[in-house]
Length: 375
Image (cartoon, rainbow, N blue to C red; front, side, top):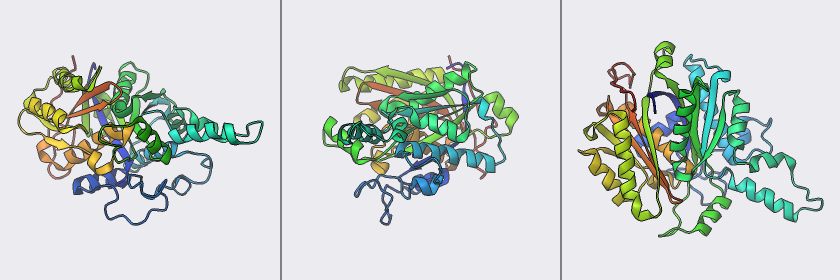
């Protein structure tokens, strides 16, 4: 990565609720999915407590152009909209022509794919599937539909890498910005919770049984340091470096994760002693190895036990949790947060972020943060 990029805004939806403020409040308070929640008639199926509460597409997005919209597209459109609304409320303008969008996913909407395929077999000839539902069976529908909905006319891309999708989207977005294809890039990741996804996870199997499923979406704005300096938009964090590895079997994960962390720290010009927090939904032995590398006792940030297995959205939601904690923890000022993730299909990655110094009780600002160019 040739130079740091600033995270200047974000929003998220999860089992904690809708919007960045709701997410941050829930994270800081230590709430978990379904905690204190009343019956939610919008849940995709009974017992799926990891779903976004109150998520009714037509109520939240309106009746126009939402008749056939699936859950994963609705989650993405809503999250991007909440981010843009917050920026507009703060007086920050953006150019849709200069804004790209990168979205991480696993396969897109499993429900849309399975429902459309099923209809092609069971409906009367000539196979009377609903043509309005076909676009949602394509993996890049959520990203494309969100761009059309919100007028994002820059490059539009979907990256599929399971648990690592949030990291992959960050890397892709950074390359778009550094190569000059977009002045500003929105990036994030999304996962839906549906009976179809739960069934598919059960068929894939997992040692120790299928984890409690969850869903969510988180989206971030990445901008150059020059644009931050001239645009009067405070930086919430700085993406310094990313690194990825592939692994042949689970036994190789700890060593390769450590290799990724060493790589991003070196590229960021940071030392292990500067690490303030490690965000990762990893088994304890793998996390312990990362913690030992960091020196001292970094804050541990993990969401799987609170939000469930949010799949492709997990790394993006972990980044949102980093920013939430950093905003209220003065110890984070000027230090580094590590984000790590591994997908069981053989891909793992890590990223390093520098947190801005705090300015009194007003939260983090960008002034005075020591940054180094990535190598």
